Image 1: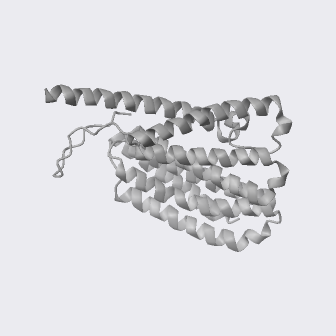
Image 2: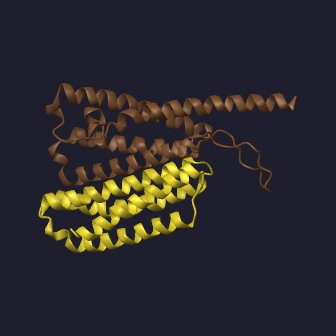
Image 3: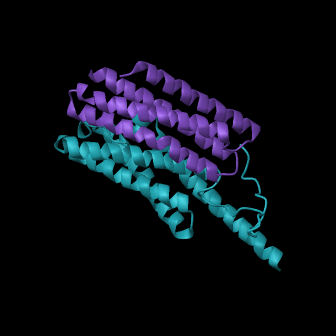
Length: 120
Length: 160
């Protein structure tokens, strides 16, 4: 699809994962840097949605195209849900949730790229 | 990772120690994972039913059932009151039985499952998460219930 964007997203979710691990070890809760990185990922995901939707017609198979579009939208939900859950938790489990969320974003972005490259 | 630490009592007059709750502490991770599975299973079943239902109705209906169960489990664990936890317990038990039955069925008679479901092959397509998760969830509900009983006993003792 748009490989540089995919790379940026994978690096950014890796960064979020590292930050969450750091906070987990230091016993910190959700703070500004974490939310800024999360917001940056979300913006990149919205760009991915726009680019993806504009190019989706290149996927000939209807079911595969539907899968691709479904992933584009689904991945948008992960970071906000993760942050909401993590903010409410006042123990180190908050960071475990963020770490999981970062991993899920990375997996979904990789999966999107896979669906794209297998069908175009 | 540490146990939920006592929260400092605020101006609202909350008790110093948080009551055990299925949706707090480690429970947040469970709720997040169940929420994700609910999302994945719902998405997959909508896609399967709208795009190619005729291909394999049984697996597709199973996907829809799994989606519903994950949804109930997510909400039940997150709410954490007595009725919700009971509902979540039922959902998790059905989930465990479902993944075992469908998993075995799909191994013994693979021709019945030309299409994947979250439960076929014991959830291998999802890293066996569908198999492990109900066990972890039921363990967590049991642990929370015991902790609640213990803290209630504590309160009753200190009231004497």
